Amino acid sequence: MAFAPPGPEASFFDALERHRASLLAAAKTGAGESPAGATRLASSAEVLTSIENIIQDIIKSLARNEVPAFTIDNRSRWENITFDDSVGLQMIPQCTTKRIKSDSPKSVKKFALILKILSMIYKLVQSNTYATKRDIYYTDSQLFGNQASVDNIIDDISCMLKVPRRSLHVLSTSKGLIAGNLRYMEEDGTRVQCACSATATAVPSNIQGIRNLITDAKFLLIVEKDATFQRLLDDNFCSRMSPCIMVTGKGIPDLNTRLLVKRLWDAFRLPVFTLVDADPHGIEIMCIYKYGSMSMSFEAHSLTVPTIRWLGLLPSDIRRLNIPKESLIPLTKCDHMKLDSILKRPYITYQPFWRKELEMMADSKMKAEIQALTFLSADYLSRVYLPNKLRFGGWI
Image (cartoon, rainbow, N blue to C red; front, top):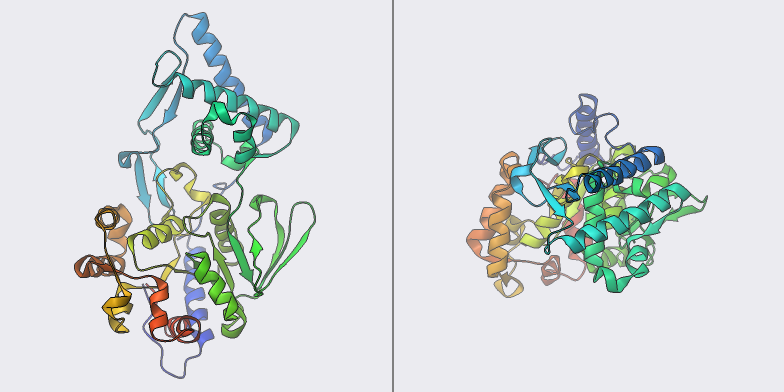
């Protein structure tokens, strides 16, 4: 919920400090705080033992003349998902499963691919080496067919072994960027100093390995799109506004960008805001950062930041600022379907202000990109819109 707008004499820092104080108070009482051990990585010995047990089960099945199969939790059904306002979307303990059988024409290839990738993971963990998902795909691109197939199988294995994906020694290639008031040291000892220069810092590939994080930032701003992120850098927003950190996942965030946002929240308990387009796609992206995704719900504790607030662009801002209809875009059939889907999700019950904004969008049948604000002036976003939003608590 947004704070009531403070009086004109209240400073920007007053508004943010009030918000941060409420977050810290919630953290002390346990609200919004991950349970102890929730983000703990599994040890190499645990991962190796889990893989060995799976292989032993396959051997036992063959010895009994039974068909070997992998049993994997079904990550694509809402009935397997529960919602906790302090964590986000989580898989229920006794969820439905799917069987990847070795004698079924529909699943025999996937069975073989799971077995192959399990053997590769075993070697990586055993030798204490790492590989990216891209590396694994290119070991036999013809066999795997496409990168998405590899990505999905690695997530299935992580879910099947009940360990975070990082414990498999498989890293994702980062696409996200970070800028602003932040310093840290990477696992190999490299010192990184983020800044508000035109060239942002790439999000590290091994978030778990970074240490000695230092910041004087007053807030963290997640920006949906790279173009908007770069525009804010060009306008020197980080330095002009106050010490802050900006992150972009360049659209749907990759795992490393989500892990970084979570790591910064755990370390500093900064107010975290999102700046997304006023359209169903932008809202979906915000929901992934805040509450997680259905496909990664088995790892929710290490990925979600439920304290995130929606700063903009709000559908009500479009009306309030009198953005002309020519700057808006009609909702497509796909947009309407996405909007209906979001409105039916369990977390919307806990976000009445979000529901009001979504219903306003549905009623108007229009959406808007952040760039629509340039109708008011070229630098309206960085000079007026964001400062006023942050100063007067214009988030939900």
